[in-house]
Length: 618
Image 1 (cartoon, rainbow, N blue to C red):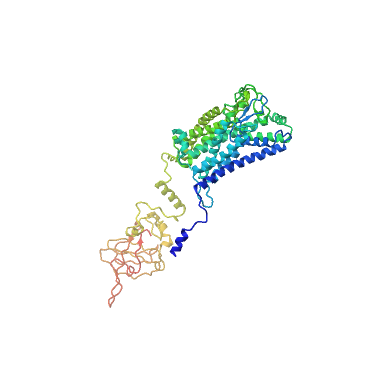
Image 2 (cartoon, rainbow, N blue to C red):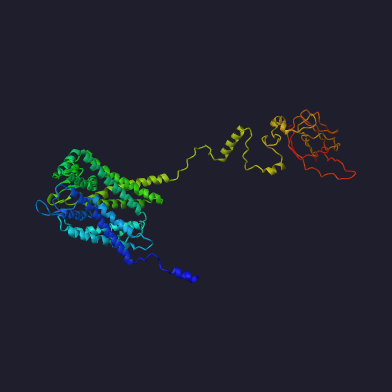
């Protein structure tokens, strides 16, 4: 059986083994498929517009060349227009940002899927997948560039040589990073070679994800504010925008083409508006500059709906100066996100807050610099050689605004967070006022509650009180609030204690109170129980040892006294508690056995009842 098990374990798997070459080939194929899919989408769109156009000047080949040129333009490659009125080739470098979304998404998706192990087979390494996907995509890009060179919009060779690998490699790296779970470990080696030492240290610190999130929030606020400015300007100049749209073409297919072009340039217009709000503005050719302070140069522009939102020539108005609220809002949001991310990790150090705010501002400025460079470019020669924001001015202005505002907001919010989390200081007590938890105040409050409850609440024990099991060994001197009918210790409370029926026992037929005994040197007092009958009179005591006088009830008529007693009970004798000793031993059995009275004790009483306390006030 063991041999069969070993043979089963060493049997071939039904899933074919995936070698390294096969894995890399799969990645190359994925990159090529992503490039072909994006090219196919643009080709179908161009073919539909060409078919619906009433003036198809060029044939099918011309439409395919235009589709290939648009696909290269979507990667940032600059094109060249050959059919100009002057016959001089003119560059075309304004890239519709919305058109860039399609190839970037396809590349990063291909790289992400290449690292997904299918059917349990091992996938390639991260570096291998990055290089293979990028290589497969660039193979198709080279073929497309060679094909577009024979059309009316060929690609600029130098521009294609560095724009295509940069865009494809960045998108593939994003896909690999997502496939690995967005790790925040050490930077890749090529990135460490390019970046300086300070930038590497800033990127490798633990709070970098929160810093990048704050930078992205600042970029979104800037671009969103720019889009609002452009939309408001278009609404303000709605008549001019409509007239420009109708003058370009009269066919519905042509108007649909203009509409698609305008929609694809909306993100570019948002970046232009953000640059305008930051201060540097943008240029409309070599001689026209548009800023919030003034519009200088020749403002004669080609007919296009988005260009009607440009303000007129002259100095800026106070309404135009109000656009400064956009970068202010971006700085506020950036600073708020910096402290919000650091607050989750624990205490916020001052140095860490400053470093995070500055790093987020640098990241926001870098992003705005790239967007400004991508949103602008040449549209021709001469006065059309430069269109859009100047990238380095836009980046510098974004850095100044976000550092100044974001750092201030981050420091203020950090102070407020620390103040809110600081433990509250104790409230000072007024002079002469007892504290609520003071022992004396507690005793006074409880005594008031106890008095209001008519003695139903127990008294708070004090440090000088004795335990309950030791209270019977010493004379009781407590007040009438103790349980089970103890006599009052105060002489003034004697009448109240005498009227308490629960604290008195029945004595014969008339008397029902405890016996009041005048203490003497050789006397031991007893009292009848609640139902005990009177016992016989005991013998007289010795001559000088005193006598025992017992008074039953309140009138004293039912008691008996020993003859020969010289000591009578005074009328105003203070109440003295007397504790009876332990009962005597039982009498011996025999002929002479019988009740025997102890000296000074009542006959036959001590052996029948337990010791009790008595006072003379009854």
